[in-house]
Image (cartoon, rainbow, N blue to C red):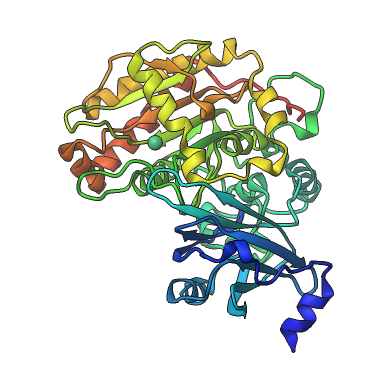
Length: 466
Ligand SMILES: [Zn+2]
């Protein structure tokens, strides 16, 4: 039997029929969150589960024995919930392996680094067993950049339209994706793509060499007037973390992703002093991205600005209007700002992160670096955005507020968090559901970004190590 082979191929020792698990837990529901970054399976139950994972590299499979449960319809549904287009999971089989042990076997599309961990009840969730599948091959952005730079001279620059319609390669390297969209032919593109300027008649066609953000220029500080300006857009929440939910059921995570897409379109059609602008989304689908990972992602592509998008809630339906936040050195500028930061910083608890995965400490040390200049720049960016938002909607506060938001802690990128509206206010919830308002808002944010760059031209940047 195949299953027997699988069991014997590992060094795992199964403890079958544990007497202390006489009263097993019941599986309530299973959820699947596929994304190129990683795919997650969440198994929610009314009691803690004990799981023993076993990864088999060839062909790549993850087997997980879950003790103390019997196979029930909720768990069987998992099989049908794996989408054919899941970038990581090919399929799942579940079976009652022993009287109180369910074995789940996931067939994987590529080699993976699985993480299996449990989460205690939080928010509306009971016990969760989380199976995260991270692709093993995670390209180093710098390696990818240099490779593209070396290819650049021989390759023509395709038209933006052609690039947009090209198949999106599944890549673990965000900057490579951006550059592919920008000017470099995607892998499957024909080599004879037409050569066109990025903006007809106005901006020159950018060479990939100039787009690699000075990697060809390491150690020099010469002003680079011909480079890609990257705006990191960070749609809040996602996946297990719906964010705030409006009285009509509108979910913050959906609204902010829609807003990010609208703003991305505008950014990708814009330029600053002849330099093309490109948006980079920290998430481009419905999956959870931990707060520190959002910061890391923006730093990996050396974003010029970081704009986190939210639409949060209050206990009562009355509060309304947009707010813009920057990081604070210590205390918050108001108790409302402190409350909002504390609320946003809880996203990891709801979204679910593996606290034992190790690199969190290093990241925290990095993010506690001095941020005086960053805060000053962030306040400038924030007030440009606030000024424009105020022309299309109500403002909650007429100035940029400050508090200790974890997601704003990139020490080298001006970073702001925009609360587009209060989703808890029925009128504002209705606005957030309307494409008309979201479009106005995206236009306003775009104008705000342009205003900021007009006052604070983007600096030549050299690669920041780390
Ligand atoms: Zn939020």
